[in-house]
Length: 222
Ligand code: AMP
Image 1 (tube, protein in one colour):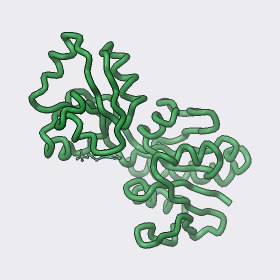
Image 2 (tube, rainbow, N blue to C red):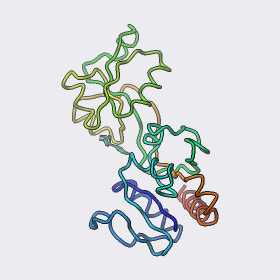
Image 3 (tube, rainbow, N blue to C red):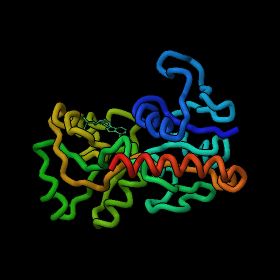
Image 4 (cartoon, protein in one colour):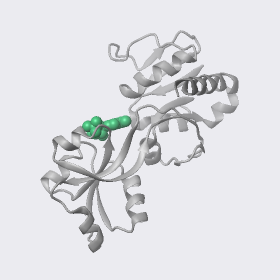
């Protein structure tokens, strides 16, 4: 049995065409079903629905053989940025080029970020992505106090909780609607295929077939 961990929404939707290219079709719609384990047209392939931030954990510890997760989630989990072996037990063979966005720093439009950085001011930064934010500001040599939030980071600068936020930006509409401006682009984000290393050895042929089909579909789409 091969188990693929996906999160509902964008990642699930954008992974479906890749699965189809591998000859795999999920037989139930996660938006209509309450099931957490979804069958596919292959009796030996199933999809488990987990929270996005739990995908690396499921795959690392073998609750799933493979999964699809954002680079942001992978880094926060402790995975590396580069391909190949990231965290112990977690192999990262493919950038799927889906759920693309960027990780950025944003501030209130009336906050002079450049001047604050130049002065060497200590910044209060609210984010869910503390590892990425800590590394970014440390490399830049900016002292920050990080405030960990789990949602609606845009609210933090508007209420005085923080000077800046580190968050995912796609169209920029959410920032604009809240009178925030993007002042730094930290990194481009996309979703990655992650594979449990032990599974890669034990179920090599089945996993290789999926990696190769995904890879061919990605090349064809370019
Ligand atoms: P936007 O208004 O299009 O810039 O989208 C920004 C909002 O959507 C922020 O709250 C982000 O956290 C979220 N978001 C954008 N792209 C993604 C993505 N690829 N994965 C997860 N969340 C995202």
